[in-house]
Length: 187
Image (cartoon, rainbow, N blue to C red; front, top):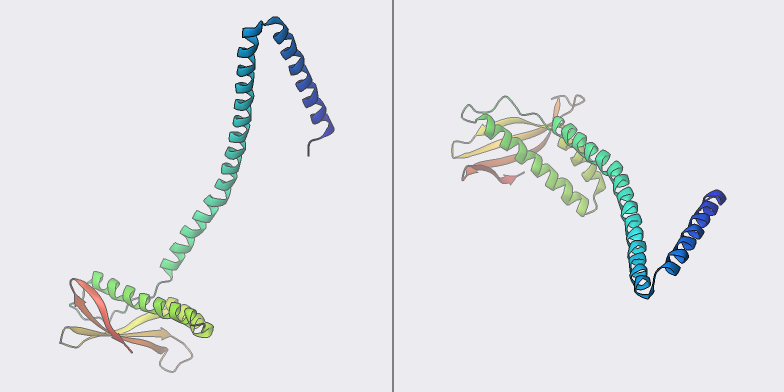
């Protein structure tokens, strides 16, 4: 709502504009009146459009103040998530390269994420919460070559309360096909 001072000064300006318009209309002839009216209408429409554009720009600048922090927060969360990824084991066979190790660790994480999503879809919230917690704590304990082109990965979750120091989470049987690792089965 506008203050009384503002509305009064606005009314004064409008009245002054009306007075100027009447004086100009008297001075102009019939042809000039038509031209003046069309110009006046165009000017008023343009003023209205420019005020709408200014309002939209103000709205866009307000949106920037919302989107910039949201994008920054998403980047920070991604970096934190990447820092919390499970570690890889050092007891991997010598024929496995660093790239293969990263790909196998990513496959194990993807399997745990799919497991968590399946539990969420089926409404098992306890298992969902457990698997999300495990996602950040799991690590590959052993990777064993079966000498038939397949490998077995033992994924564990570190637990200091357990006598062994870890709790088994999953076993994956892996093979390399077309240059990429795939999980044949998990148990």
